[in-house]
Image 1 (tube, rainbow, N blue to C red):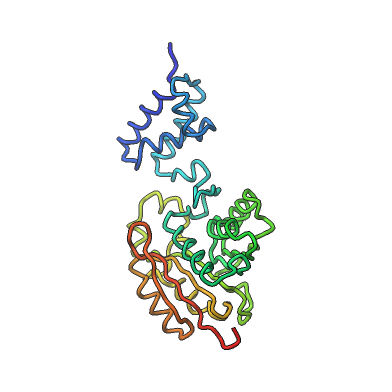
Image 2: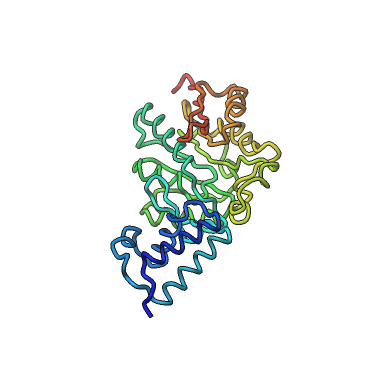
Length: 295
């Protein structure tokens, strides 16, 4: 009896995923099969007529069952791409989203405008798997980068990702909630960047099932209006920032105006701005600390 080929298995599995209403069923099938076989997706097409063993088919079908049950494909494969870099992810750590790439772009733009970005001192608050910190450390090889998280599990992933990119000696990882691990008044950081939780408790039940079931709620929700952590960061950040430093926060489009008003209300920030993501929705707010006479 002829064995099923790669091309046949892809066709059957993508049709099955489609009936289960899985987003991008063909792409999902390709990612799962390439991961199961430990090959690149291109190899699936270069070797489409290759017959598979019963073990290979069984192993792949187990991954498909996990996806149909709602498990994120990033947790199944153990990785997610962010700005062309590969990051290890898994249960207990938030999966990096494409929207967060905008935050990295805004940081790089402001640093380039200020000159000497390679010597910048950068703090990534709530680093998760380390996507922001590792990306900035990769692009700015002489910058000092520090990253915090309240979750030991998340920091373990962040350290693993820093090591996999050869950056374990370049990033300081600190366990703690937001800015609490640091002494106030030092005025040390040129950049404080954060993608904090910004989902309200009312919105949480409306999120996709796979998000609610698998991703950490504490990394997503922030009180009744979704802005508890943003308030804390905006209020506390100025005393940890260098004169003329920048604060960047990712949030929901409907939170950006309120976040800008919070920044203004501190009386500590001069320039304030919000930027749109690739879906043309406001996503990142940023503000520059007022420069002192000595700067």
